[in-house]
Length: 310
Ligand SMILES: C[S@@+](CC[C@H](N)C(=O)[O-])C[C@H]1O[C@@H](n2cnc3c(N)ncnc32)[C@H](O)[C@@H]1O
Image 1 (cartoon, rainbow, N blue to C red):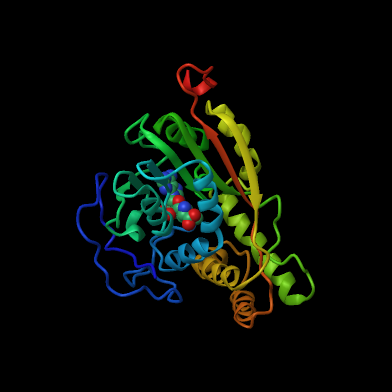
Image 2: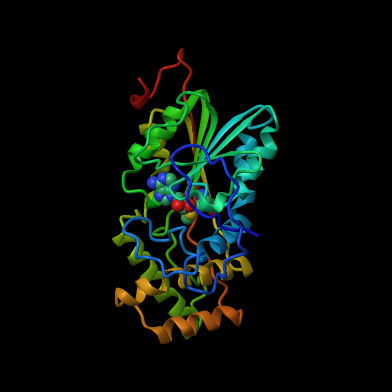
């Protein structure tokens, strides 16, 4: 199970082991250190809160199989160099490290890398993909970001940074939600509990939009990758339709943003408590927005390059 480290890593490589003080209580509504977290100005679902760790576990259950399928198909294997952007938890960096083996290299970055620990077979750095230059430009076989760019206001700059990190022939794999394509929490809108879940999903989407998230970003990915100068661009989409991992992800998300929902006047305590109780009762068959996975290759120097890479 994920544990958040002591948190303070600098812009360089993480060199010390994280403090592991027991798994944070994901129901506490506090930061992992037990303090009330300050309201964030940027990323809504910030990693400072204990619920972030629960969310990473559930995202891994729901989407790691999809991600690994794409990574394998794109040819990542022994000796590959990979950059995992906005890694959040450990599962994807660990899977990449296992795939590339001792002759490969995996770099995992995040604006808040505390849940990544010191890195078991991969290197950890704090890095803002929308503001910092690419690490080791022109050297990676794979650059991957899942559910990151939708939250980043300057998405074009982030994509340019990731594309610039690729070696010629290397692949960029970006996976992001399109919450406008399928906005419901419950596809089977069969009763008051399901309709309440859908109202609350709308409220969370409203909070995300107020923070600058693009709720239609997933569908734009193929075009965005071409505009970043990549070739051989293709994409696919998928989403789970109910199950315990969806339930636990929803409960953690609602607890994470409870204060923000109340402060924004988008719901009240009674509605949130009723929704959490309905989740616990297993009544809801909760679903998610589609995850759109898009990939493109940096052209070799002998190929006609895309516009951003000329
Ligand atoms: C929804 S989580 C997804 C985590 C992980 N990629 C996954 O799929 O499980 C978004 C992650 O992106 C990180 N993030 C947000 N903005 C970022 C930025 N500008 N640069 C790097 N990471 C960022 C967050 O800190 C968080 O860990």
